[in-house]
Image 1 (cartoon, rainbow, N blue to C red):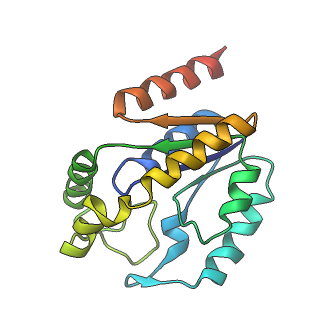
Image 2: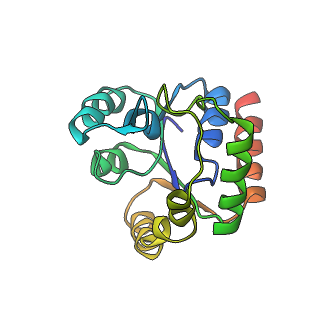
Image 3: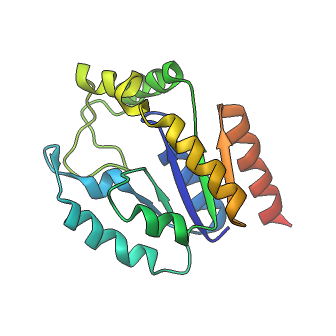
Length: 176
């Protein structure tokens, strides 16, 4: 695993998985949220995100977490040797978002853009529970097609236990 793309729903643990895999494999993860959000929760432009992400894709090894389909999506999919989709239950994701809000109250998460203290509002809750999941079936179809048409490793984890077992297996392989 040299070029890893981690996608999934808000609150599913993409950033945590990216950090864990980064620590095991010695690869600094790139967090799409950190490219997207400017101080004060201002959204950056697509050009800004593209300009920051393109050099990452040119590296020999990378971990990029976050969907942001408008930003070099095709290039990320084509460049990745491993794609991980965290397809967790919406209520588990909401629980993680609430837990994260409490843990980082008044502070900016390490995987977020500077000057964006953790917050939780009705709009984001709606995103976690409904809006952010509208393209789930399309994503699963694309990943199944990719799995059939390429030699890329495609993982679809539906729960934390599956993800944890995967991480433990990677740790075991890296030790040997």
